Image (cartoon, rainbow, N blue to C red):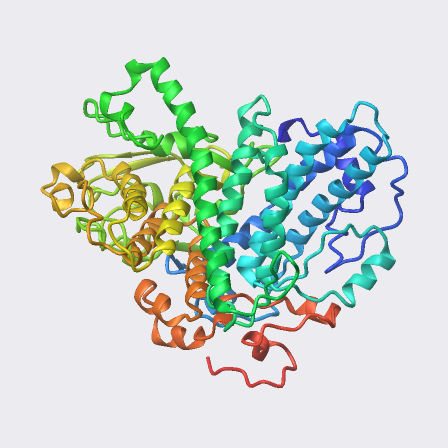
Length: 613
């Protein structure tokens, strides 16, 4: 996605298709009929320009900030710095008000409109042979890209709202937009994901393998990134199938008949967990093969231990007294590393990632902004995570230095520096409480990570756990524990020299740590590791929702895993409360759209009583 080469034609194409100001987001605004399309969609270049616009839409601040509001700010990872911000205060307290613009889905549907436009018009060009140089062979990889990008847009919406309007056709005129606005019902999220999964299974093998440059390989959908997205959606879909009958979900089989037995849904879920594992293995095999080639070609840069590692992870240098965090500096500082699978691309000029600076940490003012880290995750710094039961960052976990500006355990707030820092260093790998340092980025060019190798490892480990929650000592569960602990080991290079029991016969880094442990224990380990690994990335709340979906209850995950207050547990006691409300303006525009029953009490003129705050 060569955003630095966007031409005037790119911006003109936005006007041609009526999307410059999100006008084709017909769920909120009407499109324009004033600029005809007859002279557009004549060459492959026209398709490429709108394809680029579909990616560009996802990099916009108004969209990325919503990922954080919906996926991070509701979670136990962060605290609000300034309690006078009542809208976010209510969000964190579980009082979600439909009148807040943070719940508008407009930027996501604008992106979906771009994808739909390319999919429809591109196919018409092929069918009518409009451009002789634009062949089906050139079209199919673009089609795979747009189906995948559209799936990602919808995947965010389903994780946030659950049930959403599912639009796969373009809206080109005011008349069509008005008709859609006045009668577009929602589709159950489980069926939205089912449809998207089918699309990706059909298109994944037509995707490009290599675009010829690293930025496009990491910033556009490829065979690898489609597979990891598909694996993630399978994981989510399977969790929604569990207890699906009790939740009132209507799921169809391949013949189009409604599945009425929970046992059949459970079997389908198990098949999907296995399919997700298969997809992760396919991507891991490709990444590992590339890693082995690199290692063998330049063996002088790798130790024997590094060459024998089972996963192609970067590792902290063990040579000399080097305390530079080369893992963070390569993945986050240099960007588009070998561990990256799909990142939203920012160059700091035409595309700027300003969200991190406004919501987390200002590199110009050197200060925390809207949200800061939850103290409970960082005041554990004097503890060693010997057995995998620690919630938070332990004494040797270098991610504490990557995540926040840590001074000492008594500090009043923990400014979030992850991805605003370009380089990180630490004083002593055996004790992260000792002095560390970081260098801020000189401009807003931080890529936004969607999927990387650690996502793959955690998705696979979670699926293996969910496949056999009560089993123990199976090869699959042993592999799951190893996936989690190898990622943990990478970030705790000093653990084995601290006197920790982690490397003895019972510790989490020993070869038989998994012995006797059930899949349920692996699942809890996965969630603790995901919290550390993906801290501040907009994923934690979605993880919590996924577990609640699997159990069809919120109590256990909110109390034991999150440590939520009793009042918050009470507000979120229903599964519906784990999802966000529809924006009030959308309710007004679309009579077919019915508010989430939990949040309807906060809708203006609602007949339901407002909860005492």
